[in-house]
Every structure is written in C-alpha cells, then in structure tokens.
Image (cartoon, rainbow, N blue to C red):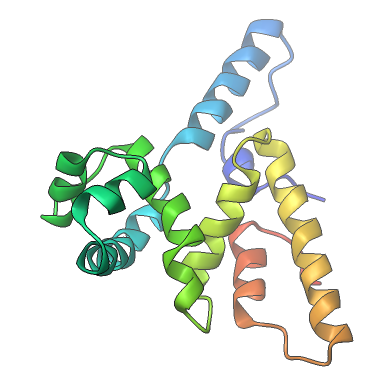
Amino acid sequence: MQPPRRIRKLFTGDAPTDREGVRALMEKLAKQGNETGPTDVRLIPQMREAVMERVERTSLRTAAREIGMSPSGLKKFLDGNMPYTKTIHRLRRWYLAHAAEAREELTDEEAFAALRVLVHDLPPGMQAQTVEGMLHCMEQSYTRSRRDIPPWIAEMRARYSLPTG
C-alpha cells in the first residue's frame, strides 16, 4: 500500500535517514495535520447556514455555547468573517453532531469532514489506513443489507488515495 498522496509529495528524493531530517519531516507532517484543508473551507457556507437556522430557533448565545465559541465570535462568523482554524474545527464538529442529523443524504464534503474528525488525533500515516478500514466495514454492511453503496464512499477512497474496495 502506498502512503497518502500528501506524504508522497513531501519526498522529492530519498527519504531522510539522519535523525534531524526525520524529525523535521515528522514536524512538517504534524503541522499539516492541524491545518484547515480545502474541504473545511468549502463546508463553511453550509455550516454558516446551519448556524443561522440554529440561532433563529434558539438564540445567538445558545448556539455559541453549543459550538464552544463566544457570541461575538459567532456573530462575526454569521456576518461573513472567515473564522480562525480552531473555530473552523469547532464549527465542523458542531455541524456534524447537530446540523447534519436532519439531512437525509450525506454529501461528499460532510463525509470527508466526518472522517477527518474521527481520525484527526492519529498520526498522519495512520489516518489513511484507519479511513480505509472504516470504509471497508461500511461497504460490507451496505452489501449485507442489500443496499446500494453510497457514492461518497468511492469519493473518500479517491480523496485518501485508497484502492477501491
């Protein structure tokens, strides 16, 4: 099995063999694991819409408390400001836990965000392996229940550079 594409891109030549080179590579990978990816940014309009609906049903303070941010920060987000990375992570977790429940069909972006939440604290090299295992189990469950495998599963395999199940 090949390592994920983002890890392969780091190697322009041979892998580092000295202790400092390996440490520098590991630090670079760790930093990349904490960065906000393009999927997180594409999910922002959906998260903003869900937060607006929640604020309309409850209040700004209640929604901010649920998400784990200040009411003033939430107001700025609703006004269109780009949130900090940590705030995006909080919004994503809230969105996946609360707002996405009402939807009947999971979008590719929501599935990718959910998988990222589940594997975020694993070392980068283990994230793709873990996602592959989860997707394999899901494919088996859909097959056993005689249901069509959702299209987002194939999309997740492509995003994580995984072989087809």
